[in-house]
Image (cartoon, rainbow, N blue to C red; front, top):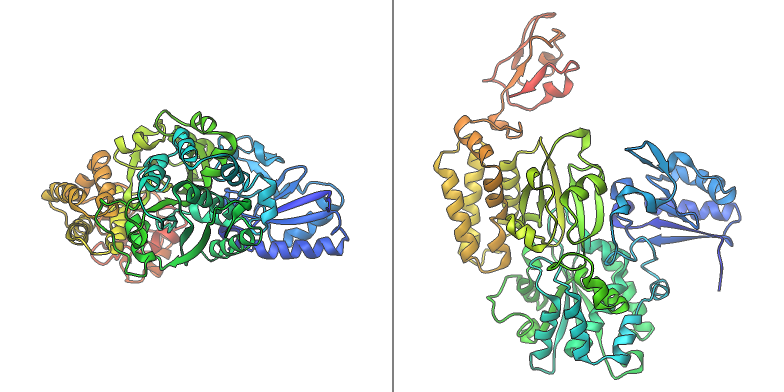
Length: 597
């Protein structure tokens, strides 16, 4: 066994990979070889650390030094100063924005201090392409324990006691789902992992697969034993090439070590897993549409009941959960159901992974105990709003969720609280909005997405979302009429009640929630023909402030349609009839004299 004085962890998740982390690793290995440190220093490729806007990220142990935004040009200095001489490269350290001090130990960074990593426990810690590193972190111990010591009924009871609920959307109790699949008669059963993550701004499942694929494989094998299945499938979108590659490597390694396939751990339990690629249809995130696609047909939802646990893939009993749900399973069996149940709230146990995005300083992947307040997520973990702008709302649950307004910022995030607010947990997308966001336009954006992604099978979703989108477009174009608000509410409730699947039933949520908390903005668009946030171009008027205009004439020279006139050293004027509201004049004015009203 080789022992190294120093281990260098370099993030190779999608975010960091897009910022040259592969070149950073390659250059680092060359520098280590040049300095003859290859017997002392080992470079480890990891998954996502979570702090995505600071990538590429590099952490050096045993010190735990956290370097951020590392470029290939920085590598030589890190190798010569830190790895060779033991001197920290201060300029690459994370700087605490509140205290304006550099932090050498990443565990003391505020972004990580409020988190508890269970589903993400190995992401950023191990090399996802090396099964031995997963095993060194107690990987596959839970599967061995289950096969050696527990009956199928006992396994299901553990999942029930943990209180784990599905992390893919509705939050159905996982143990009960396992029980249904176990109780369903049939010699052939399946376990399916939903890795078709289609919400805008969501990358939770992708990051787990990229950083810790074996946790999902182990969990699926445990589930297969529990319900009596011998075959599993991971349905993952083809747009996740890094995740697919690492899944393929992980499955191959697990098979080679006898952890997948026949007679696992020397028992008579057989279980194998195959990958199936999705073509990126949002509707295939819905479980019955996913199963239809997995069978080789066009991805369209099926009526329920019967539910997949009773009649699923090829009409056989099927246990279907998403990536994050499965990622929790090995930890529950390692530490016990009581340990997991003591985290979170009374009805929402454990932790939840969120993809934090939008108008927030610290974008990235976070995992917090259920019950953590929205305020903690936005200001303590997220670092607040850029430019000290006011927090306005947070969209949870993706296009199927709703907007939580600023006055609800102390809300404890769990399944029931979000539903009570008109939103939902969903898979875990959390998009932050500030005072510059128009909530009518936000509703239009999400409805445009769901309308475009509707499979079209049922009329309420296919036609209803189209009519709602037409109304929203009319309102944002300044053509709204008073009855539009009532029509939106009637259409939304009809679609929720009559759509075939969960995606159609939740599509109106962004509209209903913004109508509930930001009705004044709808009314301003309709009655005053104004967009309070200054977003909807058709409702804006560009004017030049006399007290700020210096008469330089730059705005007149760059206006593409000649809408600005005036004389040098006098106040210029915008002809609103000619103005196309392109914003070029505001962008170029050096004196801040041009504003939108």
